[in-house]
Length: 192
Image 1 (tube, helix red, strand yellow):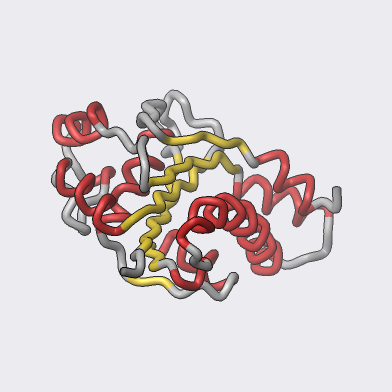
Image 2 (cartoon, rainbow, N blue to C red; image 1 turned 180 degrees about the horizontal axis):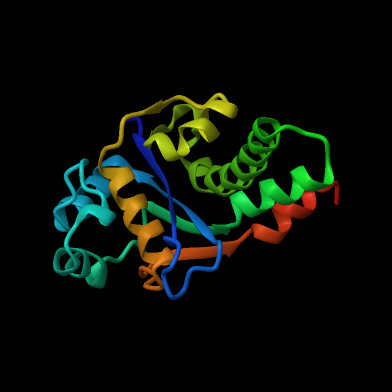
């Protein structure tokens, strides 16, 4: 029987004025066996339409406090980036348009994400085009720039949303690897 692998992709950032606002954005992905991801999402009441920012603090805390994405069949990662400040810095130092720089940023970022995802799906003998990517408008341009098919948000996206939201608010989730790519992407975009 063929494996069905889903990927949820979402971005979260600190709202201006928040005490830990530091111009960072977080891109999170959760990748794994569809049945396993759905089981985890069901355990926390994530039905495919839940967004952490719209939940009350009590429900959000209950979901995040017990969430564990470790174990077989799941890969979860939260990547710290500084998309807007990187785009602005590159624009100041080049003659490129905002849209061109933003597209380049999305290409660099997705290459980093793809290399991590490919390690996970290799044993399944799948390629990224075989994975069902679930995203909302925040990540659609990055997926479009890389010619990756994507579908409306479902449970894998809810899990990625929880990971991104938790990291952007200083409460990381068990089983999620954390990577800071802000400087690496800036250096690549500046020709380094």
